[in-house]
Image 1 (cartoon, rainbow over the protein chains, first blue to last red):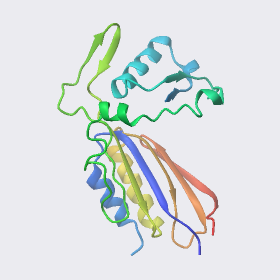
Image 2: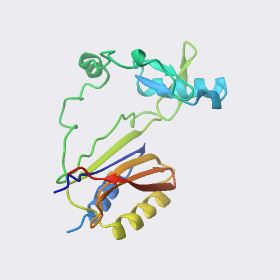
Image 3: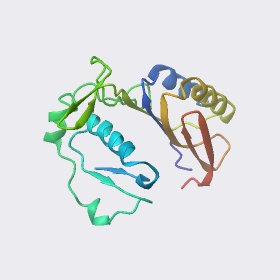
Image 4: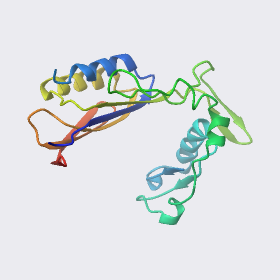
Length: 30
Length: 169
């Protein structure tokens, strides 16, 4: 079984944390 | 420790400006100016640069409740804030201090595969709308039915990425 953990980091100013977090979660295969 | 690279591509005034902004975020870190990332390894390795007392002096809440994991498997870390202060720069001894920095990082992680048909439209839309605020984004992603790591990176409104190598088993 592959060890596959997706990781992504955003760096910036005034980042919309909720928008990014929820958007990323919506891309996860259910 | 902070490396300011590609210093040969900017003027000394621009370089000083960048250093001042970095100093506004972290006044203690050792700064190195580099060109083509050239620096002796003994200048960056084994320096014992992590000093908890110094961090607590800078960020009294460093070990507090604000540094936590939430949202299932995802980490969400906030960076340095000066949100309550005016957006301006002023000089102390010739060194400008900036209080308009709202630098943040948001790190996300999931053990579940991602759907590329959802991820790419989402990230495209995100960087189109928030691109000016997103200085960098980088990631290593696992898509469904894809045995290779996908390395993603973006600068402002330009996302990019490519397959790299298979995931380790």
